[in-house]
Length: 409
Ligand SMILES: *Cc1c(COP(=O)(O)O)cnc(C)c1O
Ligand SMILES: [Zn+2]
Image (cartoon, rainbow, N blue to C red; front, top):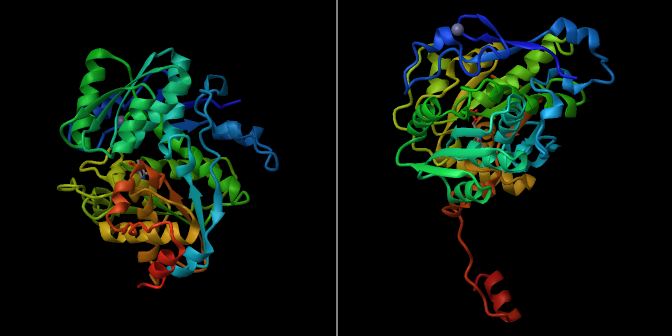
């Protein structure tokens, strides 16, 4: 049984009935122009008093916080990803109680499946036939995969330079692929023009409010897998700021439902050249990132869609933000892979890089229970890692040669 909810604008606070709006707050979004963060992003507000009444603290019905009824769910195994302790990586980073939530193990290899899943469920509820999305690559490959499972038509706009594996996924799942000669921000604008003229349900991140609700399930799982408690902090790689807002929403819902008192501190990790949200958090003033050019393609964005909500989320949680360089990302990716068995794509590895960078930082207790949210699988972009690796010379099938090689002769 899911609960009733209404949408509330994160800027003006106006409320709308569930089916009164599809995307943004009509009042606030009127002043939005392409090339800036979205205005009037909506948050689903549940009937928390009703949830409290129906809640059995020892036998929690997780469907209470579902924004779409279970009977509309597509048949694909999204979510329920592993949550594991990562001690050897923790030792490297100087933290004693480190955990990884490995969302690279979703069907399409990224956390984006959670958002695609819920928007597709709502498409099935409202009988929309076609889903449209602009993406740096993962939201697109994810939507293509979920649409294939749900029997929905899928149209995708991505920067032509997106990693090949992600383009292959989109095509394999039978979506219509429109590679855009331009940036993610260009693809985002183009997809909005497309759906305004030709229809189709637009799944763009934050633009469709259920993307936040979908990503929320990662936070709910962390709570559940952590023994029904909030960890002290969660490191989240941040591009548009929707994953972070979704994780915040999970704990905010749990707090409103009486299950926790304090939010985990949310630590936003951005790439140096794609730092608009970090800058906004640090200074209180918003400006776009000038020319994002990070190897972490999934967090490469000039004007993050959900900058306003993400900043509110970090500040409300008592967290903070930091940036990491591409070199730090690749080093963090390698160390995580070597010490945990988890191969994260560069954007996901930003969380690991951030953790290494926070070694000895007074803002965070080295004994605290901290979770790294691993948002995407490394096999989505092996090219990024290959640059730092040296493929060994081949040997003849001869043991002598193997011995010579291992002895460095
Ligand atoms: C999309 C994505 C992110 C960033 O999520 P936002 O909601 O854009 O902040 C991080 N890592 C991976 C692997 C992603 O696909
Ligand atoms: Zn508004």
